[in-house]
Image 1 (cartoon, rainbow, N blue to C red):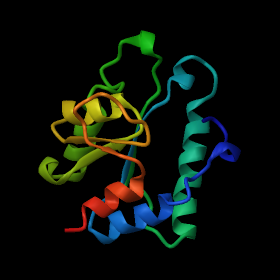
Image 2 (image 1 turned 90 degrees about the vertical axis):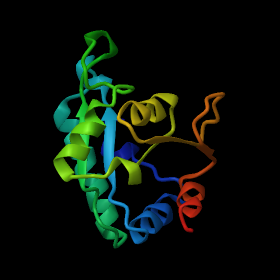
Image 3 (image 1 turned 135 degrees about the vertical axis):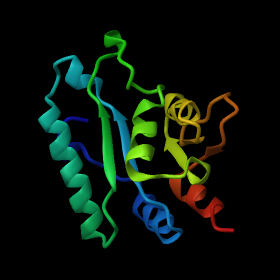
Image 4 (image 1 turned 180 degrees about the vertical axis):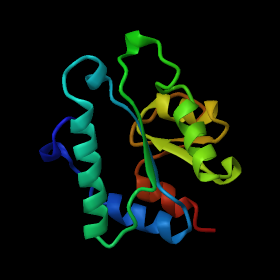
Length: 149
């Protein structure tokens, strides 16, 4: 996604984020943006989209994301930060003093869950079922509800 106009939320996303925040979780974004490395759009485009995400959360009376970690490299760059590496996650955990035992990496791709595992936290897959051993939930809200215990 390289334009603010392309931002779409699933119908339950904001409710799920609200529930996660009510349960005491801090929210972060960890994202590969290979379009930057490939020259399709600029890093500034990514920052504009992240600013809009923050504004959207505030508009819905939610706490904004605590921080963002971005890998702007293409897959051919062989960088150390690109998911499924856990580097972006471990850097955020160190920076914000996050307990890995109480953390999850939630994403819609296998590489997201693998990045969590590589960072020493539980990887969760949302929306796209895989044949992996990672926990799978149909929606982010289903995952958030599973944490209410």
